[in-house]
Amino acid sequence: MGDGPGVAILVGSLRAGSLNYAAAEVAERYLSGRADVSWPDLSLVPFFNQDVEEVGDPPAVVALKHAVAVSEIILIFTPEYNFGVPAVTKNAIDWLSRPFGNGCLTDRIVGIVAVGPSSRGGENVREELLRICGVLSERVYPETLGIPKVSQLANNRLPEAAENAVRLWVDQVLVYSKQWPGTTP
Ligand SMILES: Cc1cc2nc3c(=O)[nH]c(=O)nc-3n(C[C@H](O)[C@H](O)[C@H](O)COP(=O)(O)O)c2cc1C
Image (cartoon, rainbow, N blue to C red; front, side, top):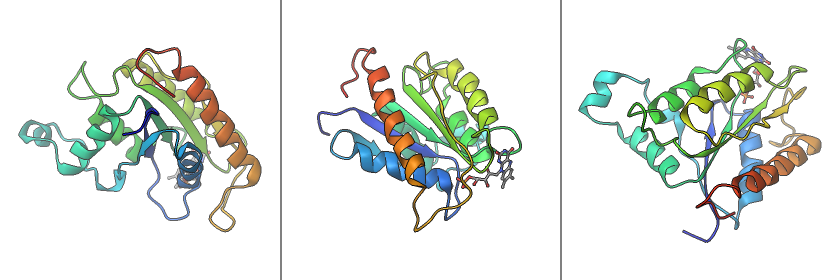
């Protein structure tokens, strides 16, 4: 591990050509050399099931929890589905919320991004995640990033303005993180 903060990236879209995945890649590239970035694969995380949990966390859940446990900062990139949080994103948060009252999101700085084609930049999912994550951590960055009116990638990249917005927002999250002890951006 280097001198920078640990940053875990969670992407709530599993599709190839995901706008949110592309935004996460911008953040990962931008943080390169300044943070220890991990990117757990949410496609491997099974649906939360308390019976499974009682037997023991499946390997993908162990990997997810470890990535978050060693990171001060959690960046969530998610689509909005049906005016709310997609299952992939919520499922990851549900696992991370366990055990109840002592999940590994506790005291994590959480940043929330939504990219999509609508003019409101996933406003509903961002608001919902602020509420959900706010129950789990007191360090949720209140300024979510919504990137509206993007429908597809060009050469696997977001439009330049969107990439710039991601980089600016990552800097803002790092500034926000400085107020919390133990975080060293
Ligand atoms: C099941 C489903 C529901 C959706 N609901 C919304 C919605 O409520 N609001 C919105 O802005 N976009 C909605 N969309 C469009 C997504 O924002 C769009 O497909 C986006 O590109 C998904 O993110 P991704 O590119 O990272 O996969 C929906 C898409 C799907 C597949």
